[in-house]
Length: 315
Image (tube, rainbow, N blue to C red; front, side, top):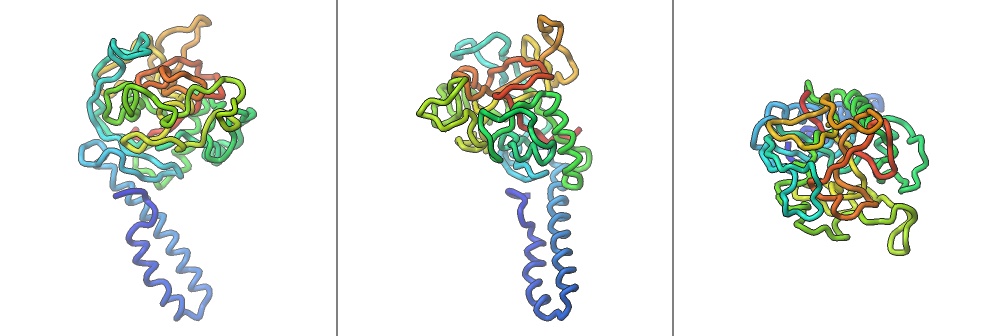
């Protein structure tokens, strides 16, 4: 599969032969039947093309940043690999708990090119129950979404995608290790573009309440409004903080395929446990938007500057 799945080659073969057939046919019913057959063929071919990627998904050979569309979401491929997660002692704005540690991701994965939008959320979950004062529109990132609700979105999206998915694959939230790997896209600097984050590269540093004359109304920006990183992924720095599936621990975890989805970490003062959020958001200063930046947030709470993106992975 090369590029975004839009019109597979066999669909074009059918389309080339369709016009003469329709011209010769005296039956409107036959024409309608052919059109329905064409639509079914296109859907089946798209699903089969993606399914054929499954055997190669754990190995090398697929280029980083290759794209596909599954369940109505655009995805980018992140190949298996090894990287240094976290930040070094010399990194400006570094916080405790950022390692660094060595991480090996033994299996590649697909990640959303964009944060989940309000239109995508409505299609799967219905309307957001809170007023969207930090930016409203189909292409705006969804927010006022708790960790619990984000995981439910992933479950429902997996069910809705159905035949598009290779056997045994599912949508879910990324681990911390997957998130940072995709954010860095092969870089070792504080941000995907270097040691400094410019206003032209990300949505950050806006006042928490209200918008000054230099900014449009609202605080979030439409997904993809800023340049992507080297793997074609947008808004990994700023716009909305993004949920990860791990419990928050005082220190990041290295090793092979680290995943703390079920391993409770640092206890909050009220006895609860937080999940990890990554990437920074529109009200934050640049230091909170670094590739290594991480903060906790209670999983049953939500905010106007926390959203999420999905990964597509083998179970």
